[in-house]
Length: 443
Ligand SMILES: O=C(O)C1=C[C@@H](OP(=O)(O)O)[C@@H](O)[C@H](O)C1
Ligand SMILES: C=C(OP(=O)(O)O)C(=O)O
Image (cartoon, rainbow, N blue to C red):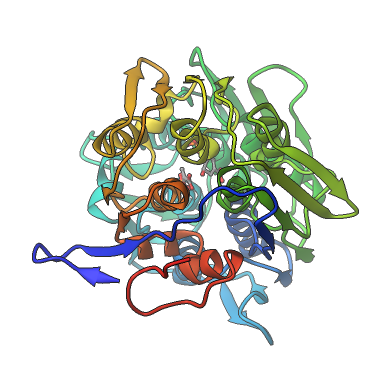
């Protein structure tokens, strides 16, 4: 790692020349962010103690633990960092909660805060203060919750919890984020009247993540009716405290599996679920379309590539999390790609459409931003700094491109700690290289 005069930490991404069979690695991927933070919320709202095993430890999940503690839950680490014991509890008093840059914290905690008693202020990183919040705050108001956001629809804001939420019916436009729906559904069984939520927008991103919310509620004994399109009904009732095991994070697996396409060879990820609501389940089909061979043997997903990557035309509205990985592959492909249905990525950790376009173009690529995505035309790429805008998935995208293009320096690669602390060590281990405290190794 080097630090420039302007204070940027730069990590030279290791390069591996494509050679069939050269890459041969098995990568253990930690638990899913989305599952971990949902299980934590449900455990904190449950009718008795619960245990999470295989949980992700990262900035986003540690912030969720701190937020739930501030709201009265007792959460203690078990015998390993990925084991959490949760005892529900209710807080009384005024607290401030740091959401960092975590969408799951800023969108899942407000409804939990409304069930507590006191003035609860949520704030976060500078980048979090521009992420959309209005529809979920208006939704809470419609359910009887006092919210003061200065009518800005952004962090910071204060919720005055009275120890109970009336609940009832509410319309929410979730076209900017599925988390507006998940954030209300997760706590809804604890509302006096439960919740009937109707999505009013013309598009709905990340439906698998809403399905994940519904599935986890049902596993915890909550009655949810999702039989009508874009309407969810949650009956009031207890949430069961229980023991759960978290699946590996399939979206975080995607950069490692992508390495097989770029470098040629095979990357395996154990623990791949046969059935899951994670959008990362789309990875095998997408990578196959881009030129890989994939197979699931037991619970081990193998992706084998030749170094030749095909462009793809894909609607990613269900799995926008995967866009940075796919954009990085597209920049190295043998034909143009079109990524569609992902306008909402402009409200992610950064404006991901702009960030990907600017950074790939900076390395010599050709990327056009459309109203709802990107058109990527492969061009010979060259060395340069890949800026990451505090976005973990920009950092992993830079690492993917650097695997093929010598001299790609990923700025602030430690931003990967949002969901994957230790990314660089895992990346180097996958490549068979020793982690280095200086620049990336010559491989
Ligand atoms: O509920 C969740 O766990 C998530 C939902 C999605 O958010 P958006 O619908 O805002 O894209 C996804 O991109 C995010 O990484 C995690
Ligand atoms: C959009 C993402 O995160 P968040 O949960 O902060 O919305 C993401 O991880 O790609």
